[in-house]
Each structure stands twice: as C-alpha cells, then as structure tokens.
Amino acid sequence: MLAALALTISLAVAPKPHIVWKPIPYGPQRKAEMAAYAEKHYGIHSWRLHPKVIVEHYTGSNSFSSAWNTFAANTPDPELGELPGTCAHFIVGHDGTIYQLVRLNVMCRHTVGLNYVAIGIEHVGTSDAEILHDRAQIRASLELTAWLVDRFHIRIRNVIGHNESLSSPYHRELYKPWAHQTHADWRHADMDVYRTKLRSLLRTDAGR
Image 1 (cartoon, rainbow, N blue to C red):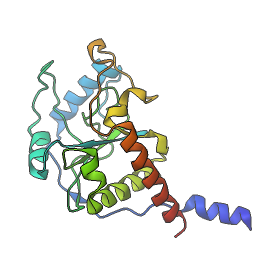
Image 2: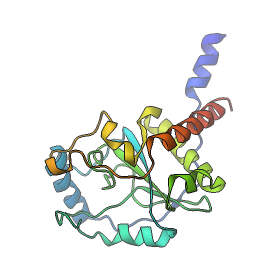
Image 3: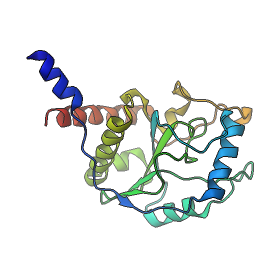
C-alpha cells in the first residue's frame, strides 16, 4: 500500500503551463557563435544544452518587447565584443503570460559561468520584490519553473537567482576576468522565498 502510494507520488508531474512560442532568430550562424563561446568559456565546443540548473532573472525594464528585441538583436557584448548576444529561454510578463524564445536543447547566453547547463527565465520588471508581489507573474513563473524541474529532474537547490551564480556547483568560467562575475538580480533571501513557494507548489501538484 505504502509502496504503491510512493510510486504514485513519484510519477506525479507538474503540469505544463500555457506557453506562447515567440522565437528570436537563432539559426546556424548564432549556433556556431554559441559553440565558439562555449569552447572559450567552458571548454565545450557545442551549442547543445543539457539542463541541470534554472536561473531566474529580471529584465530591468517594464516592457516585454524591449527585452525580446534586445535578445533578438544578437548584439556583441561591450567588454569582449563576443557573439552571440544575450538571450533567455523564457520571458514571463506582468500579466502572467509565459513566452518561450529559444528551444530547450539550445544554450542561451544569460549567466556567466552557467550557460552550458542553465535554462534562463527572465521576468519583466525592475526588482525581485516587484515580481514576488505580482500575483499573476509569480504564479506563472512558479508554474513554469515547477514544470521544468519535473521535466529535467532538476533539484530545487539548483533553481537559483542570477545573483547566486557563483555558489552553483556547476559554475565554470575559463576566462579569468569573469571568474567571479555575477549580477544583482534575484538575491539569496528573495530566492529562499521563491524556492519555498516552489516546493509548496510541487507538493500540491504531486497530490493531484
């Protein structure tokens, strides 16, 4: 009886939320740029992603279109002039709409040291607190992250904020000036709140 119950719970998965496919240009040239970047920074000549980490970000603006346009432009970074430009796999809007920009087997350049293993989720907004208190947005974000955690068997401790990147056991950066680089979005205290909400949602889903 208990074994059967445990099996039922273990097979329960978080449902896939509604996702709007809004792809940025990511053809053979950008894939080649990503492979060259991965070789320089991770020692891996590949653009293919095998997710083990999810990194939460915010856009620093209040417009989905401005973030999408930035990622689509594929502009070289200002420090090294490297391509590809920045991107993320998803953007979550204020109204809870989830947009997918890049397929999940493709690397995106969103987190120094982790692009080779990390799915990037951007949230339209300018602070952790703004997003945590936006009911529609945070609910959509948690549902998306829960689905990804289940789909790729990612540990909740590997759902991190951009600011936590240096603490990840997967962090790897061969370009020494960037070896200790991180960003301010999604600090540890706010991610503790996020992960608590995520665990609660996953428990709820498992009980369905």
